Length: 296
Image (cartoon, rainbow, N blue to C red; front, side, top):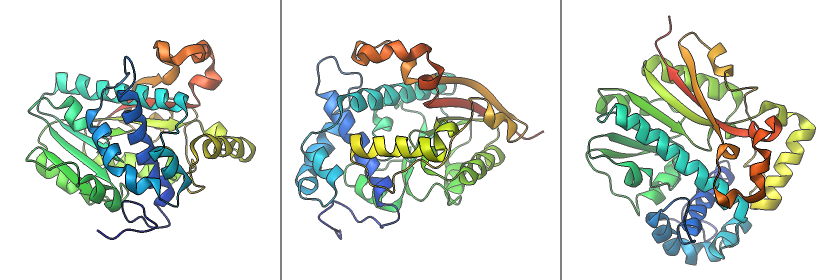
């Protein structure tokens, strides 16, 4: 495989900063999995991180070099793993109701959710940019029930492949994705999912649009770049005002529930648990869960 700047996979300049965030998530899983009393046990992440370390250690990207050296903000490790555990639970709850249902992991990165939640009956799709999926195929093998799709989530032709393999309800998971898209792109995607998959469910992480105002956005972006060493291309572009906002986009979109990091009572949250009653913190970056019924 062609390599660029000593990174383990070829990334276009337009998508590189965003795509690198999938490796940050991977390494957060790997670090936590090797800790005492881990929030999430992800042995596959440990395996992949060890295999990527030599290439990342000499990458031009400061973020990638820090990952290889294990230099990750401990608070971020906790948040990322709490989020993954919650999305795993969304998947398990859905499969408890629909054992032969279909799960679609939008912007999947290097996540191994299929291995963590597989019930032996479901159909599962991992969808991400072609470069990310090319890397993922080094470590994951497709089967009759597990599919790897190298597409932008905005290229809606992937929906046809999902429809070909699913005959029942579908759960779409968008963990750490929507905030990197433009507002109109998020809206168009959600409406397309509603139209093509009536009766499906969507659990998606969102950002508070109040923090997208110029001054607030500068503060938030600066914090991400300092704490995570992310490139400037990995900035948040869209958000919601509240958990029910998507209901206003089209009849048939129904709010089910929401979840915030600060809802968790895990000891590793430490003093951050005191912010659970603060609306400012609880609804800065959180997850909303909707049902997408047929319009009208």
